[in-house]
Amino acid sequence: MNFATRAAELKEAIIAHRHYLHQHAELSFQEKETTAYLVEQLTKLGIPVQSFDDYTGCIATIQGWQPGKTVLLRADIDALPIQENSGVEFESIHPGIMHACGHDCHASMLLGAAQLLWEQREQLKGTVKLLFQAAEEVFVGSHYYWDKGYLSDVDAAMGMHVWPTVDSGKLCVQDGPLMASCDNFKITVHGVSAHGSQPHNGRDAIVAASAIICNLQTIVSRINDPLNSLVVSVGTIKAGTQFNIITDTAVMEGTVRAHTTEARSLVEENMRRIVDATALAMGCTAEIEYNYLEPPVRNDDLALNKIAREAAKTLYGEDVLRSTALATGSEDFSYIMEKIPSSMFVFLGCRDEETGCVYPVHNEKFKINENILPAGAAEYAQFAADYLDKHAGGAGK
Ligand code: NI
Image 1 (cartoon, rainbow, N blue to C red):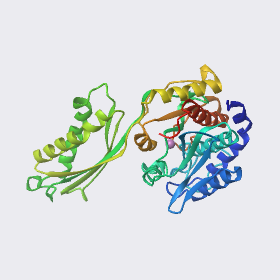
Image 2: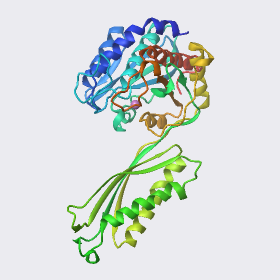
Image 3: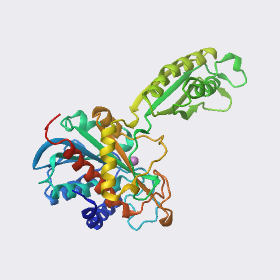
């Protein structure tokens, strides 16, 4: 099976899907029109699809005619609270909501892959599940489908993202770390309020918070191995009511990013020690809420990566493969990757200077050259078919 030619034939259909989804951009957990469209399109093709009364997104299942394993392909479907300014003719009709992270591309490519695989189901040696996942942008959208057991029969999984640092149409299948974990924290400093002219009568929560922010920098600069990437950022600080009052409360929130579990796991313990001791030194106390949200995206199943790389070469030749710098952004497919160890994540390049496709994701001007969409559909389908081929002969786990 080689899906490149058929994917090229489906280009107009895939682009039409993308235009509809782009125009009807919906926020996380509100992807009702999107889900209805996906279900309608899959049903039209004759592909069995499951949707949910209490959740958005859907799962299509293509049962090959030969026995074998089950492989999952995943696309996310939600948009962002951004007013679009991309200049495309099919801009979002929902004010203030835009597909600025390419999830409309992912969903339309996966619809294309569904058709490619459905047409070849006689030859497929196993089952392909296609997950159109809700609410990626709010970190938790992927949990539902795994936690409710809808993916418990899956042996291997693959996700994909269009990526603006990679040239248009090129595929990036990298071993090891790819995207960062994302955790967050909230620190509340308690002091004693006083008149601004009499600081000695209070315990200044703002001064303690300032010292805490400075001292937190040493987690990255002095505690973490410099060869292990790690980010600790304080993003908000809220304190005080008036210029002449020493405030008794300061609240800070921030984010932590890492590519390894080692770097990720050293932060909380060190943060607690530094925050408690610094607050104490200033005569204050502090509380920390620390939330683990998403593990890093790591392509650690080397055999699986090889299948994805070979699939790309089968489709478009040796020159289609690229590598790129690690991303400090995160991706909630990592939850599924953690549950299904045989998983991997692919970047599809979407940078195209000639057509002005140079903006980062989550930017109001983000756009892609749509000529790349068939390549995404073909890579999804080729990976699934090749994985099932390679593991044919022994059904189940
Ligand atoms: Ni995204």
